Image 1 (cartoon, rainbow, N blue to C red):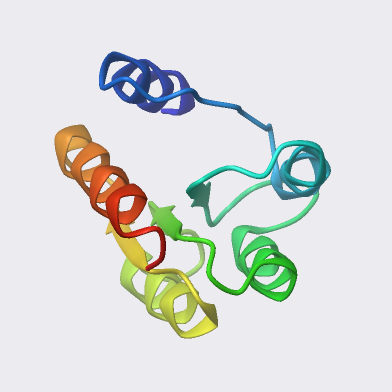
Image 2: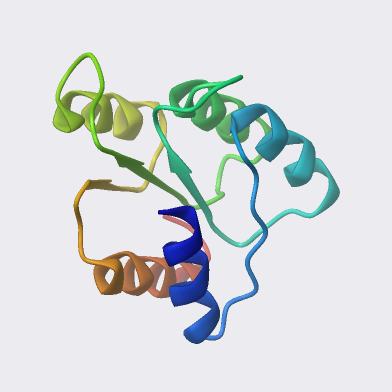
Length: 113
């Protein structure tokens, strides 16, 4: 999924930086603050919900998109929690990649969620 999203965003003209999980994402964020963050919810090391909270503390206006295919609960449950923690947009898997690319474009254009 990460490869597909990266390729779609690069085709749309965006520069993409990747991390395997939330822990590595926060390290990369400190080195190179992106215009938008797309995070999965279920990840090793540091879950997406924790990552959203940490990013929101560091950069309150950073646009964040959460994606989830579920886990112990439905994707909607995780995504509702993600938006309450600060995600600006949320997508349940499976979703249309073009819709996520459009959401990135909208968030980049406005500069905030």
